Length: 284
Image (tube, rainbow, N blue to C red; front, side, top):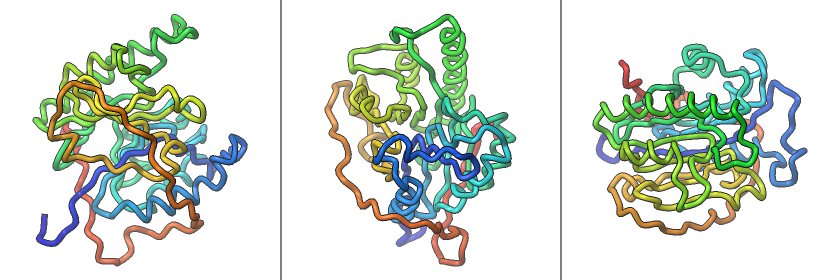
């Protein structure tokens, strides 16, 4: 890092639920989602620098097809920093990793059975799925769950080979109680993951969240409405410095400035801001 340069930070947020190319306004889900893209853009521009990386943990867009998702990808591209994209359960537009990377552009990495390398950590993860503890769990869920477990294992293997500390991103919660052990927590723990961010929970479901240090992993719910549409800055000094296996409670983030802007400046303007580090695929 050059003398006087700002440290590279890692942020996380999930469930952007963009719909610039599809008629699905989020305001139908209540006042909490009113003007959410304006609020998201304002807070992102305020908090995230061009040199930072933002993990976007699924449910990126309501689009069903490639032509519908392009305006959403353009919106994300105009926001500063590098981005890491992960598929959520509503990302029906998502096809292959190569195709998503082409649509997302050079400032985005795509996480799907691979690992992406930053200077201070390897980013690993998988979408996840419903857990067998759910009363609605079906045999079809079991097949999807097994596939997601395999995808997570492949990603973790690549991340471990890098020798860097591991930060995991998932869309579904890997657990719903601090005492719960699942196929996902078993994998995350066995590979020594330090931090895990996840989304998927909205509204009253926020009460089902697990946050804080659980068996050596620091968990964060980063659903956009839970974060009041402000990307969460991960405390890497604390998280990557290790910790004991005890649990510690964390409260929800406090109120944030929700002022909105409709126009998002292009981060590639000649502003003199440092650029983000390249996201390297561990297979390269």
